[in-house]
Length: 249
Image 1 (tube, rainbow, N blue to C red):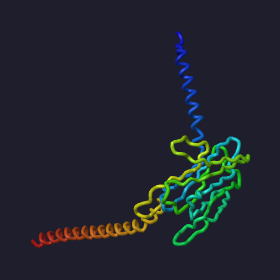
Image 2 (image 1 turned 45 degrees about the horizontal axis):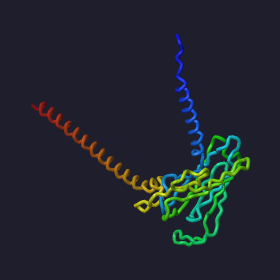
Image 3 (image 1 turned 180 degrees about the vertical axis):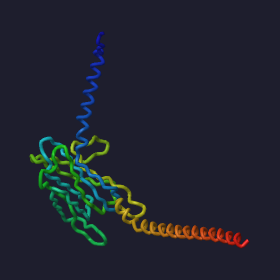
Image 4 (image 1 turned 90 degrees about the vertical axis):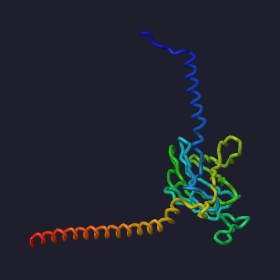
């Protein structure tokens, strides 16, 4: 039996296809390794949101030991609160504002301009990522996005600066800055409300509705049982009355 051999042209096409696929993987893989920022739920204009800075480790022989996030100076945020992250210490840096902000009727002349997380242990090891949450607000109403700048430091003292802005109509830069997309303010006026806030707000109404429904069901059951007992009593009375008449006859 003769072995079937492929044509030289087919072999060359297969090799070229494999090479092209490998090149696509190599070129596209860095896109998944950027420092990014995403809201938990939505980030509505004029409201508050919890946002997560996602930091992947791009190195095979070093760990990420520090993250510095610089908040946008053109749209300062009056309220910035970090959530504790196990194995990391956090430092919040405030600066004076050129133009004071108004929050809840009060003038604020300083705001958080930088948040720094430093690993207390090994940090983010190769093959892993870490999320760093921040509660921020009020979000500006005059822009569709907030651009942050992030510096990622490795255990070998290498610093990767994620600070390059994305320009419209151009390819993504090599080290793009994290961008938070803002959504329109909610029509209900609860700007930036998270799913948890909505659930908490609706809980009393749901509880009251559940209590009312439960009460109606209980009343219906009681009336049903009373009706059944009354019917049974009537049937019993009829049977006994019939027997009494038969005996008297």
